[in-house]
Every structure is written in C-alpha cells, then in structure tokens.
Image (cartoon, rainbow, N blue to C red; front, side, top):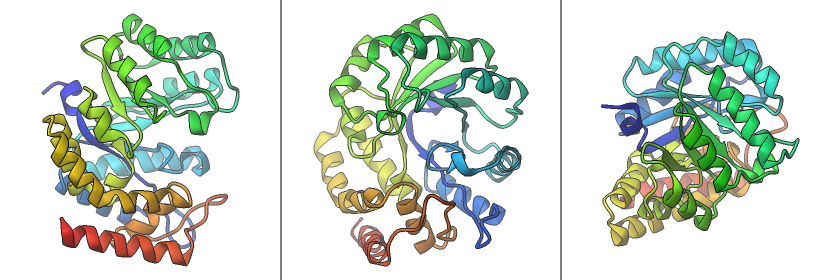
Length: 298
C-alpha cells in the first residue's frame, strides 16, 4: 500500500506523557501507542502541538522520537511534527535529524512572525528541497496568527512532489472545499479540526489528524470511515454521540483536555508543563463522565 493510502482515515496527534516530576514517561508512551494501534488508528503524529513540542528540549525530542518508533514497531506510519518560525534553524534541524522509523514530516506554518503568502511559499520551498521525507503542510491560523490561503497551498502542491498533503485546521469549510477542488490528484486534504472533520471528509477530504481520537480511537475512526463511505446520516448520528466530549476536551485548552481523558483511561498521568496546567476538577469530572457515557452508548 502506498504512503498516501496509509495516511487516509484517522491519524492521531499524540500527547507526550510526563511523570509527576515532568520527565518523559516512556512506559506511558508504549501504553498509548498500543491503545491507538489496537483500536484501528491509521497513523500517529508525534511532537505536534498536542505533544507539547514547544516545552520539550531538543535532547528530549530525540529520545522521545525513538521511544515512539520502538513502541510502534513498524505497525502503522509515524509522522513527525517539525516546524519553526525561523526558516534557517528549521533547515538545520531537518539536516541533522534522524528520521528512521518515520514516514513523513508535519510542518506548521511559521507562527508569530505573521509572514505574507510569499514568505510562507519561500519557507516551505526551502523545506521541500531540504527534506528527505515527504511533507504535510499544517495550517492552523488560531495558533500561528496567519492563514495560508488555498492558492499558496496548491502552488506548493503543484511545484513540489514531496509536499503530499495539508493538515487544514482553519475550521473554514469553504477553504477546505476550495482545496479539494483545486488540489492535484496525489495530494491529501486532511482535516485538523475535529468539529468539522467528518464534514470535510464528506466533501471529498482524505481524513483527519485528530485530538479526540486519542481517547476514543475506535469510535472516532468509525465516524470518519462512515464519512469516507459517503454515509452522511450515520456519520452525523455517531458524531452527535461524541460531540459533548469534544466540547469538553477543548474547553480549557489542548492538550489539557485530552490528558485528563487519558488519565481517566489509565494511559498516562494528568501532568503538563507550564504554561499549560491540568483542567479544573469540575471539567475533569465532566470529561470522565462523558467518556463513560460514550463507551456505554456506542
């Protein structure tokens, strides 16, 4: 099966689990990976936003990447989050990185600087030329402060064959629709927004890189698979069952919500690195009850 086919369906933006002293919890990494693989996830994204990559040191990142590779044991593809708002430093990181065990890079648009479309185009052009792995673009305006327009995405997709897709997290279905209409045949449009993911797939999208699937992988994968089969009524019906949990997971930020959920499932401890903090006790109870309800009703 080709890589493009393997990256369709439901990917999970995985957390980085921490012990009480906030060191990396390697046992929890194995537990989480086993849980996701055994419940039908298509692939895993390591060290993205949900993985708290901004507060993990370079040395920890290297060790952590290897731990995910060992835990996965070649069962499903791994995608590595690798982005920066400093193009030159990112190029150096790509040059020095050990990509053994990884199938692609997920690279976010430069954040904070708020570059023009031309700046974004030039940034990704250099990454494409430097990377030995295929690249998935990542557009998430709510975090980066800039929105990569479909014309820029399609320009990159047409000019660089190793740019194989985009994680589109603008939550703008009109923008998603434009990408689907204009994209080359061998380019993936992947939702980065759990709320609109099944709608994106019904429009012709290729799946999702999900947060909520980190705690209910089987259930959310079923919703996406139903949408990929163009079963609109059933996918919508199943989505309504998990919608309350989805709202709760993001109410006090990500990955605070998903870590609360994973701690309830005994997959990792509910520990985060500042400036992130655990969700309130009140919200944690709501998350726990919601997961229990989904498991019972599904």
